[in-house]
Length: 303
Image: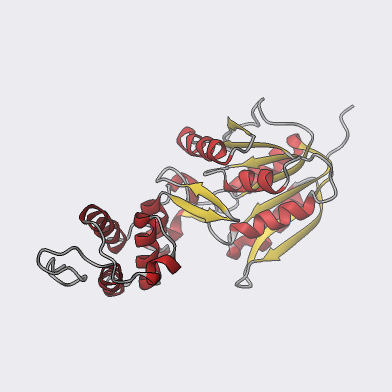
């Protein structure tokens, strides 16, 4: 239990110091088994103080005002209890963009940056590409593509209106023009979906319900079920994506899907068996696990 008199550098009648707060918070986080305890403490305190890490340690003995110290301790306790750091901060960093997050969207993962890498490569030689992001969540994929390819015409959809509100707020904050609409992979492709897309990209729900208990609590207890779980069939949403690609993709358009590492081969086989696709490939993530399935559509020209 926190000792309010001196455990974090605070003595009777004097405010705590920067270093004292960091040291005590790191101990609390380590005792709770949280990863990178000192880096987390530093991150939270720099957020509260509006400074960077170098400035923090340039003046380690500088007193921290009572209100700021109180706010910092509250953030530390939220992390001790298991709340994701990104929820506490209110944002996540994704490809250099500051993406707002909330319990209504999945926190962007580093492996999803590989999806954006492949998506960019697929439209590298296309002038003013038309892009559709299915299941956009926070909007991290769509917004990254628009940021890195300003000439792209980007559309993004999600079944969750709450998630779309977060994505729209991110687009506004980042001053990026992305057209959002409601779209449910469990239904037919909506009228708002663009036709003639040069790229369809998606990170759909792909975790089988049976794996829920094996997920880390920071994921299972805080990311929305709607963004995580595919039900009993881990290929459920990829079957739907095949139909959406057939409707949306231009001839020779590309598709890029994030996948469950254990089912990458099955997604590839499904696309070969049921989809109108060619050049199907699997990319590995930085850990060497299959993470992205991509290829080219062979949709016929409209008559």
